[in-house]
Length: 109
Image (cartoon, rainbow, N blue to C red):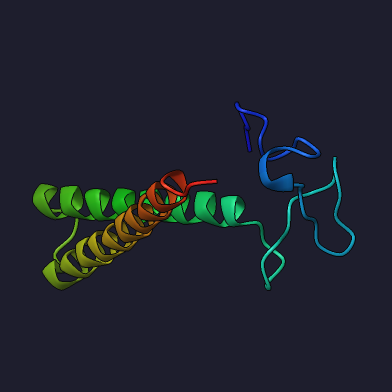
């Protein structure tokens, strides 16, 4: 995390803020991981890649249907709905993250 004002990492900064670390954590070590051992950023990147993959599969399925290489309309619709649902979920997570960021940004220290 980039701290342009130096308030978070400064020892004795405003309000005596000091970085906190979990067991086995410290400066220069890996960030805290979630209960399943994954870092949130890595999990988010994986989910973005998954949504991208699903959208690519849906696009290929639709192109194959139009070109006549495929005749199962149901399969194309299912692939499209899976991609749409995954994208909507990713968008909801993004919106919640922005709401949380705005909330933290408005905190008075």
